[in-house]
Length: 347
Image (spheres, rainbow, N blue to C red):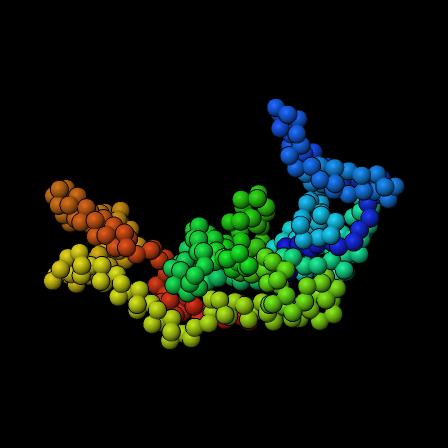
């Protein structure tokens, strides 16, 4: 359920032998002036370190100390990690509450071994990503028009083919083909089923507080984990699955009406004939293929020019509809696709 977690560590001590790396300030070449020099931290022996930031990156976590105006010391210490990646080695499978608690204890000990001592239970949550994997019945691109149909307004929407993202400054809803994402990172997909991943990302402490009602790591293990599980379903229901099936049918009919309107404006009184021709060409090309149609014509039509013209007519009619309408790779209706996803994500 939990993936990426980012926390602000309010209190910590740093030993003289810490593994923190300090990034120096940028220097103006002409004068030697340091442009972003800050006191970043001091060790237990009062030795002070200056620079633009300090960091410690490992396979299990990324820690950064950098200037921030909202804390008394002028610097803030942030820790970011993926719960399932620390626990399992990658982030495909979910980790339960006990496993999550074990991850925080492990990382806290590793920080201490690396020279930074703290109590992560007191850390403040500044980002929480939750996820749910489902096994879709269709290829990812089949659902893309449905996502565009259902997505909320007044937010940024991006469709990258195998990823659909709806976002604002406070939160993100991301749906993507998990196996393709793993392929990009050269991860082994052997034995894994086709997987669509639904991620909800709370990007700010204020948003975490308003959605979950708490902001401290310790709260995760005193009832907060169950709250997150419930709020995850609630958030997806409010953002993408707030419609009844009948409403999705209505949305689909509105989209079809827009396509019809395009043909009416383009072709005038005979628009419906052009509309039917384009739809017929589209589905013939989709489910048979232009090459197959051409081969079928060649079986009984000896005039190659007629075959060529028939193919061009088919391609032009298909192209006109594709110009206005996104491709669909399934015979299933919007309502059927929507009902499938809603049932699986909110289960």
